[in-house]
Image (cartoon, rainbow, N blue to C red; front, side, top):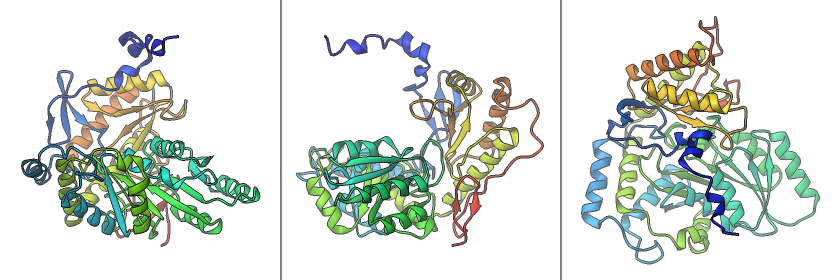
Length: 424
């Protein structure tokens, strides 16, 4: 049998019929990082993870341009060979300090940063993974040789059952818990205090993927660990969100990072992150630390977006973060509503199975610190019009709704679907 035969049915008609043609769509010129040309109209981009609105900042752009002028577009080799610049080491040093860790390694993508975990996993080890973790964490387990035990999303009782069962087997291996800090589809925050308490009880380590919370949560924006006043054993993150670049980082104890540099194939056998991307991330980090008002702005917009949508009758789930998942049950309805929102001038991100569970389809909406109040109002108006026509919300707004409260810097952290503030 021809190994390529499975690809034959994937015609453009198949993509249209199954709704997959809403992905890999081309946008044209962008404007201030908040709007873009899309299929002949100008739309508000409400699907970007450029949370602090720095990708279009002139200072970040100029840093990238200056790096290209000085170093060229590529280093032509891996970090282990000819691809390490002082620029890389400066970014690693600053990120380690910012993330509250001893050392850090920068990779060309956040996906690769998570794959760098694979050498830690041997055939006698067990990984305990939240069901909703980013797929790249699962790929790290697949690359390693450890056993994987998945626990129900956010369910610490189930996790403890699995940890206890692992102890009962008598296998003398290591245990490690993988979790997202903020879950990318649902927008909810992990219960890091609970996870680390269980880790202490069962002699396990904890890894947090902070791609969606680095730069956003915590007193200085250092992410979920700082948000809860805790330091996980290892933290990974993409640089393509709040740091307005492309790349990834893994941070932790110096000996662990040193070991991974020499054992992780994703680090040894891939070209170094480009000078432009590294310089852009460095500039974004400097601005992030110097301008906390950006973090305050994106959190304020997120809270207003959550509550504006809820006031209309939409369900934004358990999210207490700038990732706003609008529940639109049913694959066809979700994809149709996405298209109608585009027509109304708002570009969102449709999330259907297998990205999310069947029956829990969402339109993921994210605003950045660069969006204006007027753009927020336009998004709410479009959702009201399209949501009512689609029958997702009632013709008239409900009399009341449960408000979302997002913690700003200096406020007590949040936990769980009830959006209850914890006393630190």
